[in-house]
Length: 370
Ligand code: G6P
Image (cartoon, rainbow, N blue to C red):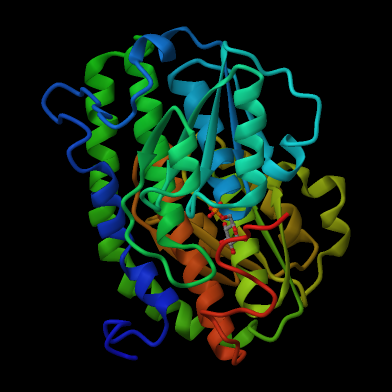
């Protein structure tokens, strides 16, 4: 079965390496790089309807929920619409203040997750318009929603989601630009530039994949046997810390937590010791200084720091035990780039621990029962 994995040892690794193509597939034909116009023809819900909504409610589970958390930062910043993010199993049972002025956006790789499906059915009954961002053509959610944005990532076999997540991020960034367009929230030229940078992120990832994989392979020997891990980030990269921790839990069975770096002092700092590595996402973005001071607190307590930061940032080297450098991209696109080392780190650790990467115990690709 090496053939169906295209020479890769696991589907997960193959799918990690397919991510540049997944981004390209998601974005392709949907943005005009001369005018900055975003076109989403299969989104049957009209631009008029989207121009007048007052709030967006994002609903998802697992990795798809992490994509939703990133999208909140993007949509509020560029489209100026308040966004709520819910875990579907919570959304479906809480008191929902949803009506016809609220757009419900369900994010699901499979389009079949029971809780997410129940969530959109409930929102629809309350009069909300429903859109899905989905990878599986013709799935239940796409049939029930008022409109779908397909991610076109191709079939994902590995239980732990990788390329589906990256393509969800790409689709959500596109949708953000689309909302900004129908509501005239940002100039066309800015949309065009952001769209171009989204497209370019595929090439950036293509180039960093082999190098980062090799580097991580040589790094993990000193920490693959640890029992606990902490992942931290701020802003758009906070959800990427959550996703990194989830990946590690799912496939290596190491206990891992994701935290907003600014929350460290409210608890997790008490746990810091040499046996619990802290992976910190520290790009040179608007919250860079804040994140650096958070991780310096860890350093001061003799914590073990694995940093992911911007090429050329020599300060990070002086405080890290291990460092992975990534190229500079637009700061709002960092989630796409910084996900890659987190995925590869989990993958290499899981392989080193002898885990069944593609079929982790107790997990299902799609959870179609409650
Ligand atoms: C399961 C999978 C995860 C996935 C989640 C949501 O837990 O193992 O990888 O993120 O379901 O699935 P969905 O298809 O709705 O994105």
